Length: 147
Image 1 (tube, rainbow, N blue to C red):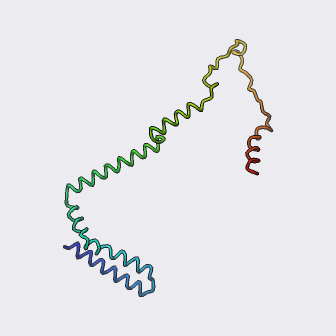
Image 2 (tube, rainbow, N blue to C red; image 1 turned 90 degrees about the horizontal axis):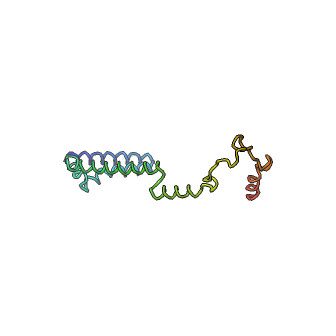
Image 3 (cartoon, rainbow, N blue to C red; image 1 turned 90 degrees about the vertical axis):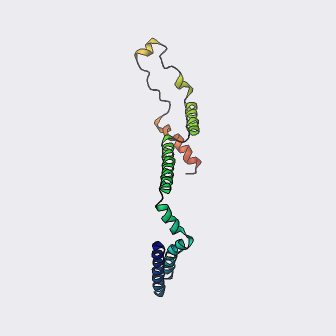
């Protein structure tokens, strides 16, 4: 009963402020104030205030809100772990298989030397391209795009 009276008074005060704002020719602001001030009286007329008062003092309702909060936390935490871990199980399996396929065949061959002479000294680093040719692939890309 008291809540309905307070909500009605707040709505009446809000409508009064909206009328003063409209008198000052700030119609957009007055419309917003009127909209906000109609919400409390609308809640009273729909019975939401009585429902909220009954819910606020109900232990069963608080237990339900607690369970809803726990469910929400579980959803959020699983989503965070999923993002951090790289996606779903199916996506991780596909990424592992793609990674296995990306390994070069020569990488799995043993790298032991065949000759005892090469075992004593390391093989010189083979350089097949000249320094001027290092940028040939970049030049090809730029030409492809017309730059």
